Image (cartoon, rainbow, N blue to C red):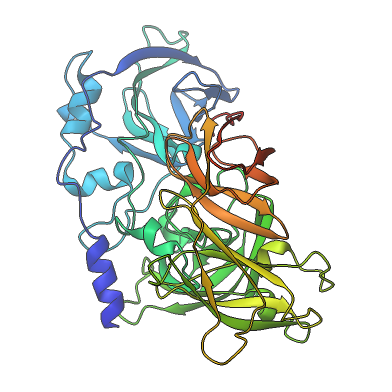
Length: 461
């Protein structure tokens, strides 16, 4: 109960007025509306944001992208071209919540509206966002223009402001959320019910990345778990979620044990529930065939090496499980439980471990058990590095998959597209997804090599 209250309090931080991305730079447009449904692109990027149709002398507006639409009074609006800016700038902190997707003072997101009906002379404020960018999109003021004559067409006036995704990202649970996930084997997060909040991120969970907040990491694949209402946790297919939930992407797969339970601090219809999850590696999925063996990874100073990727090189596995389920990551003390098939020769099998990024290091050892008592230690004593640059850069931190020997790893890719890998020799397979089209590229892991790989960006969505 205390932990739930603390996390809710940490997330409550209203922006306090207009967000920094609001500018007096709205662009006016006019669209003739008929009884036939018409798609409107707010940004001209081939993404339909709104679907509008005339109904009598008014207009029905439905959002085709994630976002919210709210009918407003014209009292705060002034003459063009500043009408839209004035209307948004006049919003109170609470009224901003549907447009900045923040939590309110009550620790709840404002329920979002995805359609609105406007009579002649009525106005609405709208925001749509690009899930593949984790924000961005557009804000707009819509107004049904008065008709000069009864036979004149219905006209929708729009004033549109394009948003920079770097400045208008969806809010996160905490600033260190991404770092905390590196190496995490278990955790829990709050999920708000989609039936009452319709929030774009906080009602669902990305199993592959064990993540709630970053829509940009699952825009193409979709999210596996959705908290619908009360304690109703479902798969994206609509089926009730089982205790074990899997996801595939970036060339690998991941399995979690998941459980939803109420937050003892609240019981209203908008209240979140806790999703508790834990990783399931090969030994948990097939305990009769796979064992887990303790090992500690140390750096060259014999200090613990956290977030080191470890795998036993075994090209003859028979359990039928994905390589990613045998590839694990060390905790903050450098410790890891390494899955190895029981049929393998534990004394003869080779183990590799590496760290990627600015301090790329790697090491090897033979055997997964210490020969004479004590801990089984793997030392990262080699610093040969291959520097990879993915072009064009993703512009935000994302993830790649890496096939290396008989292992598969999920690695963070920097916003500038750079990735430092251990120069283990041979060819590795690099798997890309968001914000790129799903693709696989070969990379030679030669010492001191600088490799530039060219990827195709996915269209916005």
